[in-house]
Image 1: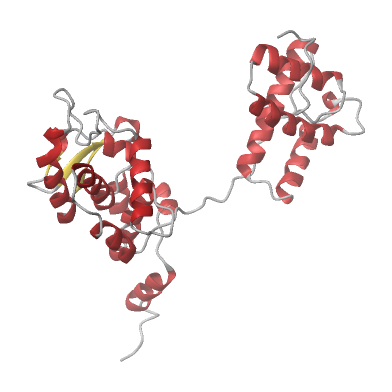
Image 2: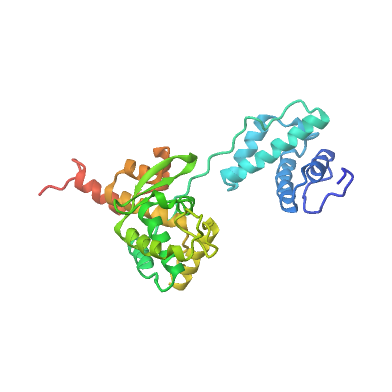
Length: 309
């Protein structure tokens, strides 16, 4: 599409020639979708707001940009949303420098504030047990699903680690599995007794589904390795069938495993190894001790908190 093409109405910016030029760049050279174009339009509208009263956006300085970032944060925009806005602005200024020789990009070096990291939700031990114990074993797919979910909770595996697990990496006799994690790093994880039982039941039936050349532990009706979406869909179906009220997805089983191990042991390093986190800081964010448990441990162990007999 040429630069003379009409700009869609979804882009809410004034008839500023520089903004219009950037929009036409997105449509022509960028070939962006209508959804992406609309997002850029909203971000440019914020830049237009900041540049109001100036000759054009070229007159803005890094001080102006940082001040507006603080303003956006005060409006309740998350750090991630502000980072997206700044990314769009950087792209705008790069095109202005290329096509109109604007001297500087005032957005370079400006960073969005960090968003507060949300802890993933964990199920209670009773809720996890109730869900897993009520999974039926009346057909081959149900047996497979139970093995997947038991292993996810038992060993805190990511969904990618579950579906990519080869048969040769399972050592049920010794209760362990070797998994390939992020960054192609392998780690050995323990496998609990209930997961072992579920896996043994599935492995006895697996030959009825698996293709001859498929090495992955878990396969679908086609005989090939499952996809992450297939695991997510099956878990969602079982949640509905068993009447589980809260949302349920593979990552929640992983987090529940980590939370329950941490609550019982208090050993953050062990949980880090179990999850395959490169940094202990990730584990600290990912897992948490509930306050009642923490208070109980504190009362029992802190020398200045122990109650006298």
